[in-house]
Image (tube, rainbow, N blue to C red; front, side):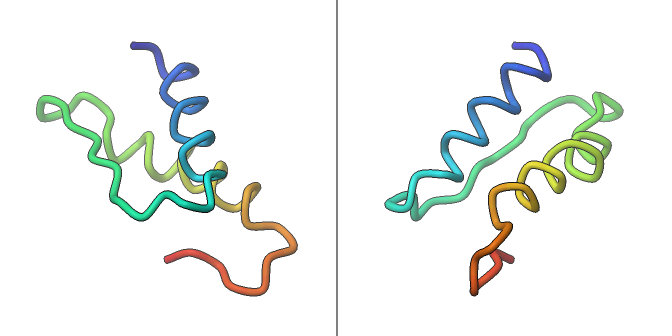
Length: 57
């Protein structure tokens, strides 16, 4: 799965107000999990949470 596809799937999951579970990102050492978190996932979460009273942790 490509990064763009992963971003879309996670964004749709986070937009779902009934989603109550965690998302696990799994991969080999050095595959870019932390890079994805800090550069893509944080941006996605900030975009989704704009205008909300309660920001997600």
